[in-house]
Length: 404
Ligand code: PLP
Image (cartoon, rainbow, N blue to C red; front, side, top):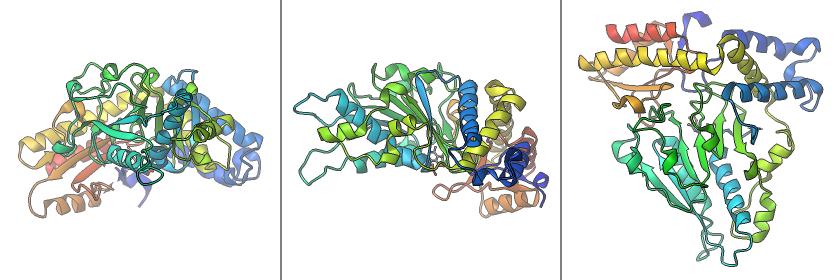
């Protein structure tokens, strides 16, 4: 197959823009006339320095990241951040209470709306385990709201959240990639994340892995940490962006000396990464290089974040309209009923009828549709509409759904 015969609806790693890939292929062979490929250059040389600094500047411009936030290029995927946010924010809390003779483990509040926020919560539970049987735990993870009883097919409403007043942080996942629920961009929606209900001063952490760069980030300045793995809208897997408010960059070794917090591996300490401009150790140079090209492309060829958001809204509208029509005709079931809770990045649905799902997927394959199978944990169909998926691909899928 040629690339232009295929409509790739992968959930991640996801498709990348063709012009970026062409440029990256060239850079892999011979970066900017150096005679050396980009992955063969020193990460401390002037060429790579220009790449990573350019990427940061363009990311700041695209998302309007305020100056009091550091932008880190970290490793270990989103999964490592499940641990890192816990470890850094617990260290921060410990240092804030450095003089407490009887330091009490803080609560940490999780909003659990799908598979990924569940995993993050479970990691907080695991890392809270006391250092010895009978000793105090390091933290007390709580679920501040959850849609688990509804099988993660909707979002909580504002009055369904129960935040603790003194939590070390509040955690949520903006877009649940597997289940297909996403907090609406409209902060007035009843399903919007209730920033105003989070007690003042409590840091808010957001996992933006699968909606990063798909539209502007609402209330970016109310967040303490926003993180996202590259492999959806930014670049190839390997780099994870962490946007962290600078006052939260703390020396975790000092916190460890006070006791009452878990050990923090040096790779997980945000301050170390920030102090070393994300070059504490060898970074994932290829992933950062391609991400830099994508950021340039989004700014210059896609009309920035406003242009991207508009295109993604049109794609979502086209697909959900076709799905709603097919559901009304009894052909399939859309997983997320509430329009304000529907993900624009990962659209999930179930084909009704014995053997019909297989038929749908096989017919789709023949038409060039790829990677439509839902996540193995939930089944069904999932069409991921990341930035590099065109409206034409989405329209082709919508037509197929109507005709099926
Ligand atoms: N968070 C979200 C929302 C995700 O979609 C994923 C992976 O798809 C992760 C976290 C975990 O990321 P990784 O596989 O990079 O560890």
